[in-house]
Image (tube, rainbow over all chains, first blue to last red; front, top):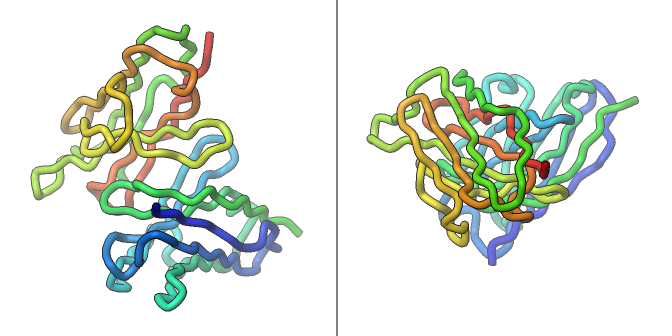
Length: 116
Length: 112
């Protein structure tokens, strides 16, 4: 069974970097698919942030392009999100998901609050 | 960016009723390969979003046949033929045809 699990700090200070890990079991991230980060803001708004492909290429939402980096550790079957220079507007629940035009497997989400 | 406008924002139903959600796109969602990458997700309370429908009308594995997706171009609809308690939550349309991929604003389905 394919499972994704996010981990990382739940509180980040403004201007610092947000770093999250997505650990994948049941599927090797280099075998196929894209591996995305998505966030849901307080309220209902959702935003696709970007992905790293099975080959290691990346595609980012231009709204975040200067602040976002998605990388991976293939030996641990994990991929990572780094979002720099965060503000309170980055407060959201962050999800990782497997994608191939659609998101078929999701993690349970991690809530991140940006506050001093 | 492609804007997906969902209506209504909230929908109150009686169990067993039909529910219908509209998703209108600011651009055609037909991709150059002929496919239309319009999907529907449901986020139940306390859970992650789950895929219901992909490529406009294809039900994902395990999704009951009371969920019906339709549409083309810029206008899409999700119908739930007989609402059951486990159908309650927030529904999102999503497009992966144009970069960046974008979500609709969500429709909350709740009991009357």
